Length: 358
Ligand code: PMP
Image (cartoon, rainbow, N blue to C red; front, side, top):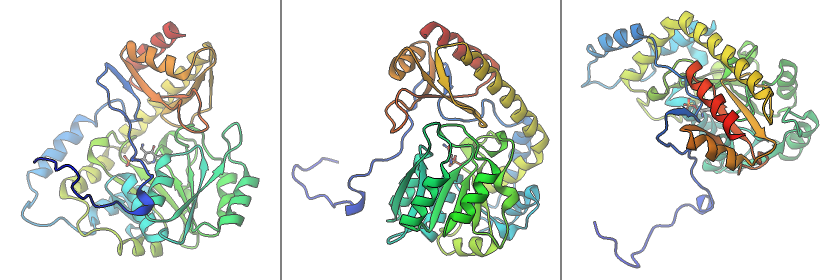
């Protein structure tokens, strides 16, 4: 196709003109520790079971629209009923569906920064006003600030992220309960990294509470390629999401992949323990280098070099074929870098490169 000079273009929605998309640069390196994925593939037995079931899919038919078996398996794993579970293409799509149903024009969505950028981004895409509260200087949640934000903007949706991306910090249970009391609308706790943390807000979910917890198969379950996430929340909320989500949004292969993954819960729990042990080891090693770091309950660590700039250290690591997330230019995160916990060998490579660069 040839571009015609001066050809009329259709203007994007006015409220989207100033927005940018969300990207994480993908660079070809030996050690990739920038996107918080699991360091290894799912178990071989999962692959075999998946291949066997795939061969029996009726490809000419639409998939089960309600993802009945998948939701039943997820529900059983959390001791709730399928009516409390909604699944979608990654937890990002879960968040999008939630916000399409509960945010939108004329409503406010509150976040406490720094946090996962997509919460505010998706809120804006639905036409809602994204209201940014500030965390305390140590990145913990400041309840006085929560009170101020909810009093001023009366958000329909308030987000917490625990462990928080990119800080790695876990919100204590007392804090989540307090925010639940303060928030006038829905409280969404994004637990994409929940399995790495010592407690989960899942235990607070109840039909009488406007609380939703989101989870993903992308991290613990080693299935980022599948794009599958879900929420556990009140049944009245799950019923409303059905109005917003596209028909047959979850393909047959994904429904099988997720259902079978849950059979390997014991193996995954073991892997989580291994990743947490490596996280503790990395944090210990960083402790003897010239960096400031934050206490992580996730599969990644946020740190700030104290004698060199974040950009210099990021480039130095890249020169040694180690890719971490460069948060240096993000608001409130000057000079910060975020490293995903990898295999022990990858973590060794990261630490060796860090020692050289610093
Ligand atoms: N929430 C948080 C806090 C995340 O860090 C991520 C992944 N970057 C997601 C949600 C989205 O995960 P996915 O869409 O792969 O489930």
